[in-house]
Length: 297
View 1: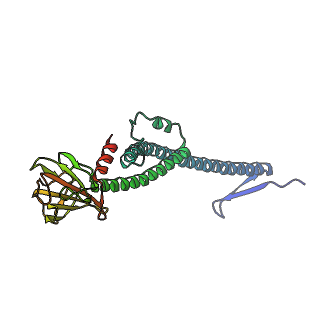
View 2 (view 1 turned 180 degrees about the horizontal axis):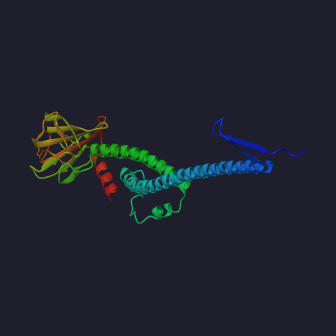
């Protein structure tokens, strides 16, 4: 059996006449199918629009991420170049400190020149740049630690050298040596705890190392005497002076004038009696002059 047609009756009121419209089932089916097709089209269009909108958002996010990575890469390149320059300066400073501190006497030489590291950085990707920067930062930390160690060595060596009596206390020539000798007054064998340096009367006598004055006055056998105490248990004595120019407790530097050549005390003529002592044990002063001349040659 065929489906009956659909009849639509339209009327303005109950008394007015009515109009009838017959709609075939085929037309109804076609209309329904058209509506479904339109709804499906709108749905697909909306889905497509949503998909494209999401892609556009993802693209914007991706573009923003790419821009961020580019900015970060630029910052890494600049930071790496600056860090490389700082490391180069640290390496030069470390090389010089090694030489000056005596840690590496062959280290001081001409260094410098252009570096290719900056041009190579532009060929690195983000991961490689991060790896390079971390490597440079580790190198910087290692160099900074090494510099602190070398600075401590250099400072300690500077303090040690300042306390070592390495210069002549007066212009003159050694007239008597350190060690056992025949006493010039009685001819007996006696220990001479220093050296005698012949010099004209009134010549200036200088401190052979920085230190503090612990004695400044007359002492039996020495005449007018100045005693300086230095660091590391070192001490020096300057005897037979004509005049003393320092006071007890005064701090003097290497090369400061402490008195003048004379012949006070047990002396046969103008000269300086000069002693070097370590923990109050007398040492040969000429040994320090030789070490100083060998170190400067």
